[in-house]
Every structure is written in C-alpha cells, then in structure tokens.
Length: 209
Ligand SMILES: Nc1nc2c(ncn2[C@@H]2O[C@H](COP(=O)(O)OP(=O)(O)OP(=O)(O)O)[C@@H](O)[C@H]2O)c(=O)[nH]1
Image (tube, rainbow, N blue to C red; front, side, top):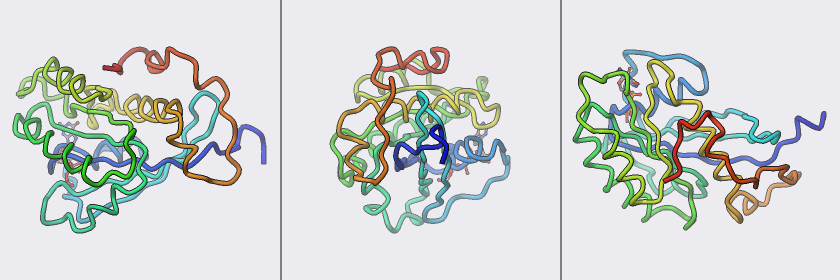
C-alpha cells in the first residue's frame, strides 16, 4: 500500500432533517456528482461510502441518509449509534423545515452515543432565492445557539456541498477523542490536522459559529 493510501479511520456521518429538504440530493451530489429533480423519498435508510483526503490523511466516510418522513423511520436509535458527525438540513424555501430543527436536535441528543458529535447545519436549496423563507442570518443564529457549523448550499447547483462535508470531517479529525475512539487497526497519526485555521479550508464558505 502506498503511503498516501493509508486510511486514517472510518467515520460515520448522518444526514437528518425534514422530508424533502434535500438530504438524499446532497448525498448524491457529494458522492456521485449528480442531481435528480424527481428523487423519491427515502424509505428507512440509505448508505453510501466515500473516501476523501483531508490534510493529507485519507478518511473513509460512511454516510447514512435517513428518511425524513416519520412513517419511514423505524430504526432510529441504530442510525445514531457511533456517529461522529451529523449534517442537519433545512430548506431555505421552507420556513416549516427550519422550525422543525429543534425537534431533530432533540432526537439527536436522545439517541447519540457521543457527547461531542460534530454538527453541521445546512440551509439547502439556496438556488431558490426568490422562494426564500428563511434568512441566512436566522440560520447563522440557530447554528450559533447550538454550537454547530453552518453553510447554505444547493444540491442542484453544487454550491457549498463539497465544503459542507469537508468542513465537517475536518472538524471531526480535529476533535480529540472523537475519531480515535473507533479503535480501528492501522490508524495513522494525523499530520498537521490540528493546526488552527481549518475554517478557511474551502475558501471561507463555512463558518465556525
Ligand atoms: N431547487 C432545488 N431542489 C432540490 C435541491 N435539493 C433537492 N431538491 C429537490 O427536492 C426534492 C426532495 O429532495 P430529496 O433529496 O429527496 O429530499 P430528502 O430530504 O432526502 O427527502 P426524504 O427522503 O423524504 O427525507 C427533490 O425533488 C429534489 O430534486 C436543491 O438544492 N435545489
């Protein structure tokens, strides 16, 4: 195995939020560089794996895309178990999806097995500027209140999508005790990942609130 192929660890990341805010679309955009305007609701859970390189360290991401519809959510506690990162999504053109964020955070608190899970708030569909119902400032304020990273994004135009995942992973690998705790064999020592300034990683789109 070549040195740059050494895997740092496998991280479990969850995507949660109301139905039709674009969770599956963000995942598809990130893993397959595609967008489907007629995507069907997720039933239960979808799962994709993608390997990315952060600070010269390769991380394998196991990304779980959960159903937003209550009736399709059957295995909730097991989705959350062991997750190091969570992407909480709302739709900037749906006030209702924003107002439900508290409920999703409460569920996360209830089922998450880690106290220091890294959270990213994503205001998706920012291509729908004319239909906007949630101001960016409201998203920032919510994220700040709940110690989350924040970004607006669009699975349709790909704006912010790569950045959302990369910043989340960057933050996870910089959080002591979070990823090492997976106890995987062959864990490689991080090189330079603890340096400050990771917020700038994607050209400053993401904000650490
Ligand atoms: N304009 C626009 N539409 C989007 C965007 N992201 C997703 N959509 C559309 O919104 C609809 C719902 O997207 P999904 O990705 O299925 O939403 P979801 O959150 O996974 O929904 P559930 O599986 O029911 O929880 C689909 O028609 C998508 O094509 C976006 O960034 N912009």
